[in-house]
Length: 391
Image (cartoon, rainbow, N blue to C red; front, top):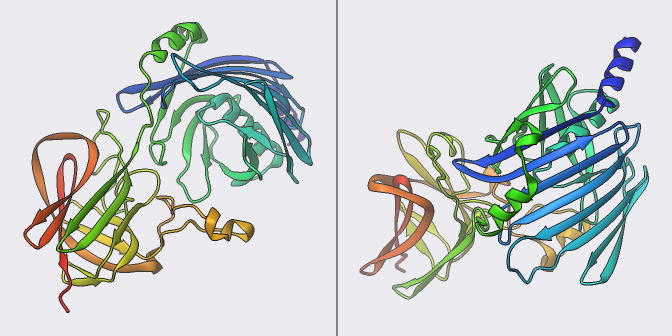
């Protein structure tokens, strides 16, 4: 047993290099290229999942315990932009992290207590996910909690790491499904499947020689995708009732949506990112049920045989301690559905659309003194009639 552990430790300290192409449906949203030695990790990531696109270069010093002791990061916005570049120097111990962020010649310093030690967290950086696997194996067990820290965060958070089989690893945020990783006998990531998560990305390992970072920077600078599921809102007044809906707008991107990206028989946030928020200035009737005036979140339960609309009372994110102060509480995230806060569930009608709708959309359509909330995506329309409750 001791020999096998020593062999595993030596394998994880062995040099390696790799690259990943990151896709969301038919769209390539980023690339990564890295090189690792026993005590150093050098990584380049170019992402166009926002506007402006950004290139990130970092150099990390690796400790023998699977932690990173120092990280130096350069973030460079691409193309014509008013967003300044930033330079980050972060130092990590088993007790704390000190992070210096420099923008426009001004440096701010954050000191974060990390009682168990923490690894840096950078989204879509799979070389760091390799390190989470190293750390998890050194801690032992499955599942095991690995503490990580995002730049700008005031406290670390845990990732749950599992090893379902010798050639696989799962890594999950709290409350979310895991990203699944194929790993080789050395434990290094060979492929990434995030389709169970809210991010929905895939990453394919390729030869580092095929990822010319400068070429991707030039290509992505002129073609940023912008926010992948941008926020939108609907405002309407029908029969004296003011209706407000705030939601995120995911896109098809060549994927099968209902029964695929949005599974059958599972509660869906009815959009993306934050839970869809619905406000009414007067009592409504939907599906024969009364919806008192107020603010709610809207969820749906898709099924091949019929859909349900769920009106839920919960609108604010779960919180602890100081995070419960009302001015700082955030909107409810779309994975934080709580069935015990349901107000009503009602059956709703769907109908086929004559042509696919690329980006999810919600509209409020007047029909005399009543109205219909219409939700269109892929080739499906969800129709939710409503009217003002008569007193």
